[in-house]
Amino acid sequence: MNTVPDDELYGFITVNLGSFLQTDRLAFVDENNLPGIGAWLRKNKIASPLGYTERSGFCQYEL
Image 1 (cartoon, helix red, strand yellow):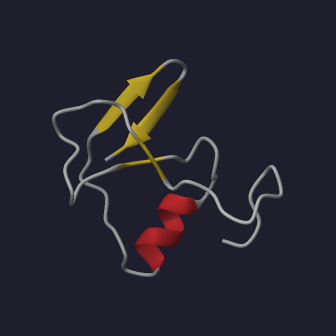
Image 2 (cartoon, rainbow, N blue to C red):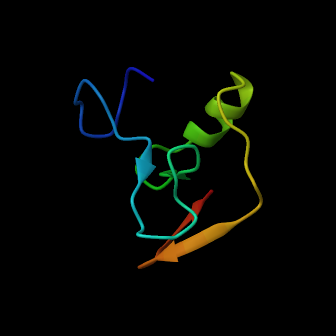
């Protein structure tokens, strides 16, 4: 969690895709820029996948 690809002190875990599914409790996780963040969120019982993904450009994001 302390290391992100561009050596910034923080990274954004979610992406805004403009989907009607995004709410204050549901978000798309950005595995593209933070590889392994989804597994880390599951392991620490912070979030769980809902089995839905949405594509934006060449990337797919899990809800």
